[in-house]
Amino acid sequence: MAGPPFSASKLSSTHRSRRHDRGGRGGQRPRHRPNVYGTAFATTAQLQDLNVPLNRNGGNASDTYSYPQDATNHGSDWYFESIASGSGNGQGIDSYVTDTRNGGAQPSLTLNLFDWAAKLGVNGSNLGAFSVANYGAQQRVDPYDSRWGNGVHTNGTNVTGNNPADAYVANTPTIERAWIQHLISGFGTSQNGAWRTTTSATSPACGTRPTATFIPTATR
Image (tube, rainbow, N blue to C red; front, side, top):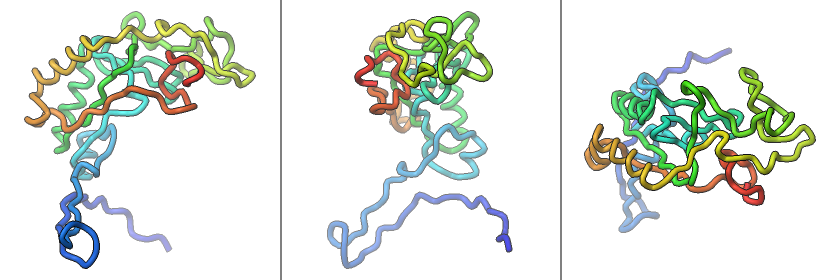
């Protein structure tokens, strides 16, 4: 017999320290940090329902974020396509921060430390890193836009020698600094509640090429 429907009771990240015989300094149970609890890409309504303190904007869909383009390349999550996050100049992430804070959580953002950042096409259209027209037939293509492949030849070998400029634009510390200044101007510093943490995107996962379509083959 099926049990009762799930009730979305709210989470609590407050833990009391208690004395006990083992563990912790001076017999005290270590206190958990509240930021070990969180979610990723949650909506305002989901955050209010779950009552989690942190909402992460990270992973393949964030590592190559471009502030001027307001876009990110989604890596192997979606055919290595650069896709708009908003209308430009950081609007997409601005909305993410606002929606997260309206849900009672703090946003965790990803700072792109790669030499390349996502680039959009004409009128903000998607650009893929592995064009079928440029690199030939591939094992899979975007079912909604067959111009873009998954970067794997039909024989199972990786596409190599691709041009990073197909779907990326050069990134610099100056650009990333401008984005941080933009966030501070709009939301204040992290100490004043703008965002709780920042993750640095610096290297791809070994062997899977999740985002690094511009990294030499040996390290992909």
